[in-house]
Length: 258
Image 1 (cartoon, rainbow, N blue to C red):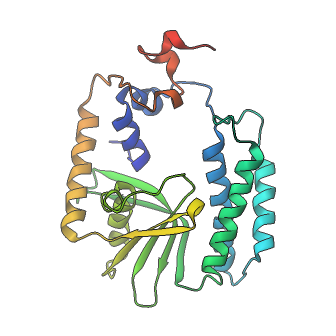
Image 2 (image 1 turned 60 degrees about the vertical axis):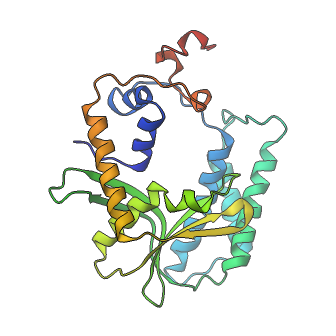
Image 3 (image 1 turned 120 degrees about the horizontal axis):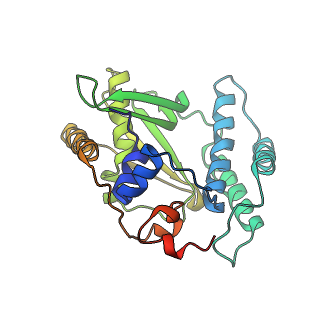
């Protein structure tokens, strides 16, 4: 059985055919990169640099952080990146990233709220004792507070803040909590924290043991469903416009314009 991730599971939930084409067939397509995820990646790069340097007692100034962001933006930028909102420019997005970093820096400097245990920390664990249901993922940042609380931090550059009930049911960080509790048996409390950088806002959630167990069972059931699927039927939904596999899709291939 392959190793699963939140992204892999979400792809199947969005469209089983897309899952098959991407993860099983490895279908070759021209990937379309858009500006929003590009912006998110560059802000993540900058915050990764900030916290990795902090682990070795080097605190970047705000100017140094912004300089690094601009440097990595220029290095990674290419002219095939799509801007879907024609009312916005590349500079609008670039400036948004700078604003996110400035707000974050001013809110949390000197960044001594907790011990930094990991930055872009890879997790790999099983949902079952027999090791069959393997999960992997990367935590943006893992901290431990002075009172022993483990904090799983996630950075968001999306233009929407999730409702509290959505956060309390969010799967990705919930799965990461399972992995952290496996790695750190002393973890009495784990806090899930989302940083909505565009809004200079923070939201958090905690899970009961019962909620964690329910998530574990639900995820195992979803993996079993995927493994038993022989049809992988396409599903039309609001994500179709962003799909790279139109040429293979019965619903979309005749709409492909090249």
